[in-house]
Image (tube, rainbow, N blue to C red; front, side):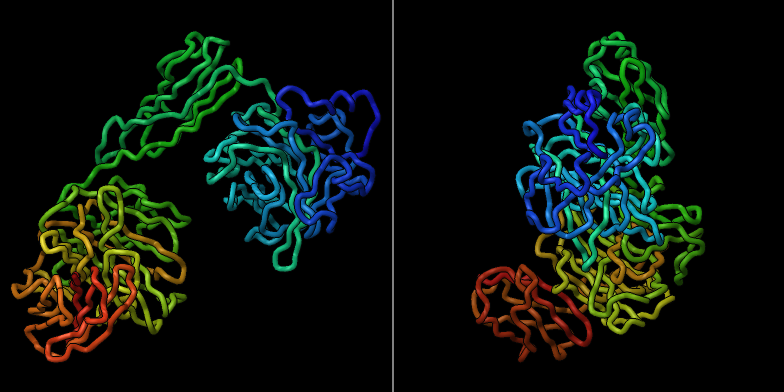
Length: 630
């Protein structure tokens, strides 16, 4: 925007109440920002940031003498190289409240990265604005973040001017929100609606000014034009509202296997300062009236669980409060049977029996058809997942003693793209606080077949793998058993229903599980989790087969002594008395000894005192034991 020497410009150039920074970049054609109140904090003088010649951006209602900025449309700042970065400081650092940064932006070339932020000093930046090329050719996406980008998938056009508003709560933990408008200027934040994207993360407790950045990725620099920059303490410098809404609390009215309702309570202060009208997107409003009460609680009742609500306040001022719905879901009683009889395409997490442990781009979905296994009557549908996505758990009565059996049918339908050198767990048990414990792993070493393994941690070096290989599109029946008394995990592969079963492999955790209260289906990552179908889940304290009377061990009659061990010789025997080998791991999962068993003994003189895991292999069967060396 070119300089215009009029009384009007002088008047609007003066910072008004609540306004912290204003810059229309109306400098002389091609002038440097560092010659006009900006300071270089990186790469000073290298590809310096300047303004163009009559390159000011136009946005109806915002730019121009009759627009919000009340400034001529002249020049604008150009970020089009990899070099100098500059900042413009506030009169004094801001240490509390909110900051609203508004400006016009036009992206000619997008390169994934940020180019505008708030900050302090020369190396502390937050509330960063990002742009990247969209997956849609010729389009771009905007993102925001304090340390890393959270992108919206909404597509915007290149070479198009948008009005951007960034809201930052000055705090080390406050979220940052982004709005991008193609037209119009919402009079209030409430009227602006839900932000395009909101991100959390480590921010800063003090903000010194606005920072502009130039960068390059893979040899290419973005080309961005910025104009009409404003920083306020309120939405477009509107008068601060006396009424203040605190964060809402929610409470389920009931917890059943049906869709329940919940009540939301929103505390307020600063009431009795004007006339306010309340509205909600769902439920019925009651409680205290902020028009006549100085402080109290606004209450919204009768909202369906999983339904988010927006409370909107208009009148003397405009406010809104987004209320995130709770999940009013049951804790399943044992035995728990899950046939996955859900409508095809339904996300498993939306049922009354499951909830997301973590949320990803892809949900575990119901698919048509059932898996079949002799002795199990399958009904309805099943669920399917692949690659990365949400991890979904079903909570059940917390179990702390005896045995727990978790069984299900599983079929791997595609191994395309799965790494032949890695492994991933797709099913796990967890305690009441959802700390993962017993895990079922899967891997493929040839790209055409797969095998299962078990352990109790994210460590891959101590996984006990089955020697059985399975082809895709075949159904396996897996039973994961945990014995609290003996602190042993076991996996039974395809046991005969009603018959006598011996575990395929066992694993001894380093410590007894305090409880088991959840079963989780997990989507790890592309290249790690293959395409899988799961069906007919049962969680019970009793099995549907007879446990082998000989031993809860894949190696029949396995004994290891003495334990604790004070000498140098460890003894191992078994019923088969066949050729046996051992691998010993330390508590970090590092292999510290590998040896064949000679005359039923292993020399461990090279090991220091401590706790170890011993993996024993005999005739293709494996078992693990915890060993204490004193």
